[in-house]
Length: 118
Image (cartoon, rainbow, N blue to C red; front, side, top):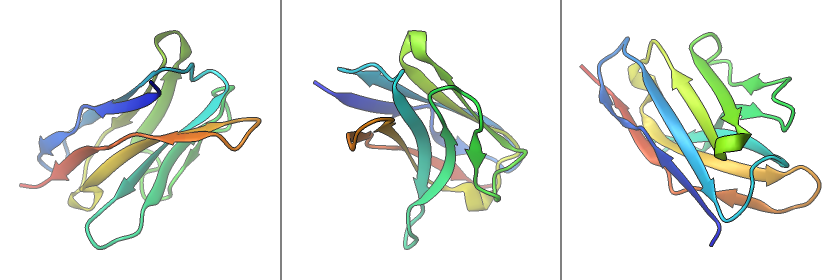
């Protein structure tokens, strides 16, 4: 069974950090472009960060550049999102997406909630 399972979300205060994990099962992430998206209530889903299969030429949303870092560990079949200096506007459901480099196959996780509040 193909699955992407996100974890690591929670309630934190402004300025604190969190690391999200996205664990894949039922397929190997190596040939997939991996991304983190987020969706806040009443807002459209937006791309937060994307890491290609090579791990190079990573893309970040302007709003998170310098604060968030995406990484992948193909041996563990897992992608991470390190989030530093969190702000209330980072509050959202964070979802992981896998897009196959050479086909239209893609998978989504169910998401993990991040809430930044004092």
